[in-house]
Image 1 (cartoon, helix red, strand yellow):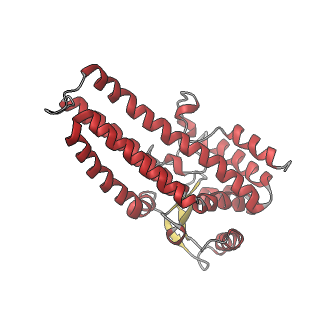
Image 2 (cartoon, helix red, strand yellow):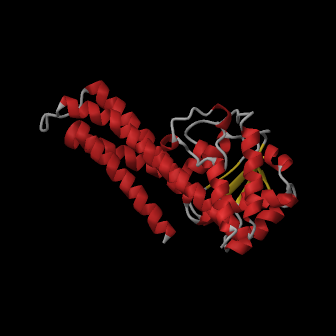
Image 3 (cartoon, one colour):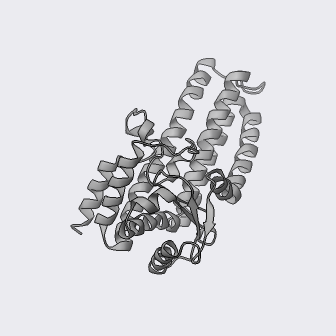
Length: 279
């Protein structure tokens, strides 16, 4: 069911992109948008995980090089009925973590050296459970495709501004075109951010249920958020910020309200986790 929902969202975002291409340049725009969307989705599906791990200089580890981390992940994957993902450590001091990969068989979990130093074993277990929940529900693929299509829509809007929109068979209203070129990238970004925030809440809940201890993740989130307010991840970029358990730009975040947040506030996440204690 989760895989079906993932593909449905991918198709929906792709159709939105193609429709926008048609609004800008008629049939020609739809064809161009379809080709771009197909290429970008193909790349995102098969190669985005490799690109992201390489970008953050992630180092692969196993039970010999990181036995404690491996043991935690192995225990949780058995509990979640998931295959063992590939494990990576990122040589950075900001404590953070993310998961990537298109499906269960190609999943990877990466944590920073700073996270392993800052958190105790129970908190690390809660963070890993959060990331495995993302894997279990195909969140990483959804987030990657949503970010890819949002970026493509912004690119298409710039293309429309440059060439004026419309084609010979379908002249366009310039006021409508300008409005669409401004509004559509905002709409796509809002969709991307909304998807990201909702998936964070669900992964938090998944972590609480997987470990049986919501307080472990609460404690981890408080530590991670406090540390992130004073540092940034040097290699972090806006396109991948949504993947991390804590926004790597927390210390430099410019707030424009919840619509443009990649993550729910830590306070809201802790409140949701507190409610799970009553269940």
